[in-house]
Length: 307
Image (cartoon, rainbow, N blue to C red; front, side, top):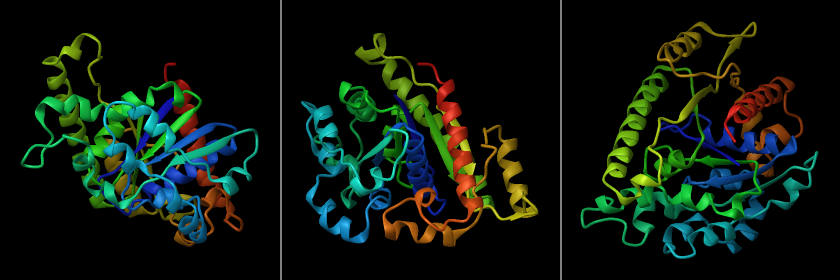
């Protein structure tokens, strides 16, 4: 089982769209996929249900907020019990794959406050509980209940919050969707600094903990940028987009070869029908091919990870 965190501090970069389509495409290739929605907007959750289904079905199930509120005892079991299956979507799949998800809700805006006794009077995570809080998701995904999945994709909120940090600590790969513009290029640099601080803080807390003998130090996660909303001319990014793509590459950050072109109309209606774009009808072939190529690149990266 491999874990991928899809994260970016900046919103509006197509993060949820990438997560939903990666999950759908990998499941359609025959893989067993779990999606975890950590974004309070719950857009990933809604990507697999129509408006009517969301109102009827999802209001009857528990969300990831339940897990945040749970005590340490039986926590992994609680997380496993939150898994739901989008029946209509899974009925479309071929090659024996299937997809399940853990829904989100708006309570995750203050996720750290939900965890019992996690914050001090100032609202900050208690220093003595740093490792426990940041390792919470990683530990629970190690439960045998999750061994049945080939890959777990985590849609993070657009902020370097506790939920995002939990996802990164639990992940084998961090995928960063980004637009080819100045703000995104700057944002990726800031995200790199935040990752460095997280790694340093984690290892500092580990060195002073009883767990130092049993837990490996945290390393900077394997990262890859996938550019979204790219405008192409004659099959290549327009000059201004190419400039910012090259700036990110110059930072030494791995960048996927495939870029997702700017076709907002092809993505806009998919959520209404409860099916990600890659599985929807009437999608332009070039958009479907972009998504398929990103899926192939991610699948190859997953295959290269140690077992």
